[in-house]
Amino acid sequence: MVDSALPLESRDRLLRYLFLDLNSYFASCEQQESPELRGRPVAVVPVEADTSCVIAASYEAKAFGVKTGTKIGEAKAMCPDLICVLGRHPLYSYYHKKVIEVVEDVLPVEEVCSIDEMRCRLIGDERTPGNARELALRIKKELRERAGECLTASIGIAPNKFLAKVGTELQKPDGLVVIQQDDLPHRLHCLKLTDFPGINKRMAARLNGAGIFTTEQMCSASKQEMLKAFGSIVGERWWFMLRGYDVSYDSQTGQTLGHSHILAPDLRNEKGCREVLQRLLQKAAARLRSHNLWACGMVVYVSGFTKSWQARVKLPPTQDSVTLNEYFMELWPSHDYIKARGVGITFYDLREGAAFTPSLFDETVERSKMSHAIDDLNQRFGKNKVVLAGIDAVKHTAEERIAFNKTWLFSEGKGDNEWVDTFRGLPREPVSEEQMDQAEWGEWTDN
Image (tube, rainbow, N blue to C red; front, top):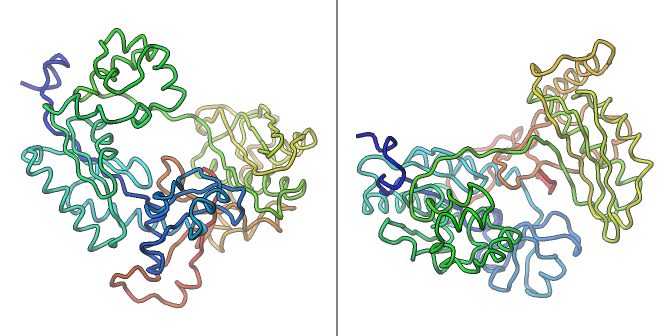
């Protein structure tokens, strides 16, 4: 009998998924690349400014209370010996590809969930606890030997993908947790509500309002109580997932595309804000064109220490940098931020090229052909060979970075975001002088 044809509560709850979560990934990459950082408290930062925030912290730094989002100045006070390292996102992308290669040699990767997370499906004899554990240990061994001793991972194995991910939170760093049917739900009681993916502080407050303050209370709630607490069918889905049932559902992503950037202190002025916003606009527009997307709306903003500013505008469907820049320049005079900290731009209401009919009276379609030609020139001769007028002074800012569930770096031109293997404490192939000349180090920008 096909299991999927059975009622959900009648299906088996055998082990089905292995989830891998790399520990303190960005900081671990830096420690692997630079042996002098190993065993020391390291914080990966976007800019050298105490007012900015930590992107990632090594476990040595976490022992002092330093974590993602901690102000750099506060982090230094918590940990006087903290070593701050500028983020190098091409490096993290390089290791990401290597980790996938290593894992694939043990188990096929079903889905790459983020830059430091991936999931494998277990089949046949792989689903027995002993064999599943052995596969996880093989992955850990291969990572140490082929990616580097600093690249450790917590692995969760469970009957559904949700609990496999939760399993990685139960033992860190370098953990291995197998959650079986008989372990549920009491195995989860040690977790806080906000330890679960999908429950942030706002959602936790909503659950608190429904009388659910602990994981034990959530696990003991009935389907109807979960429906009421979550306010939708999602609550019933959680009831099944917490008990190990393999519930499938569609995950949806928002139809937006954008970039933001934490400004270096010397750019926290009107001219710097405007030029970096134009730089982000050019970069985001190139991404639109690379996916054949057309934007029907744009939001620009400046986040300020004292006061922030935001403006939005509806657009005729466009992907052209010049057209978008004209709309931006119409918005810019209305800015009223105070003490700029960062800037950002987002395109929304995105449509695929075949999903709309362009106006016969709008120049944006013809202009987009010119923008595509500029993209081709940059891809052929190098990033920023042709840029919008007025951003030459900031064209090397706002480099691509890895964020949230992003797993790749967009290339704006030939050689962009390539990482040449320098030293990882592992055997490597010889690197030519030409390859070394092409290597670039990334900075921190937003998604």
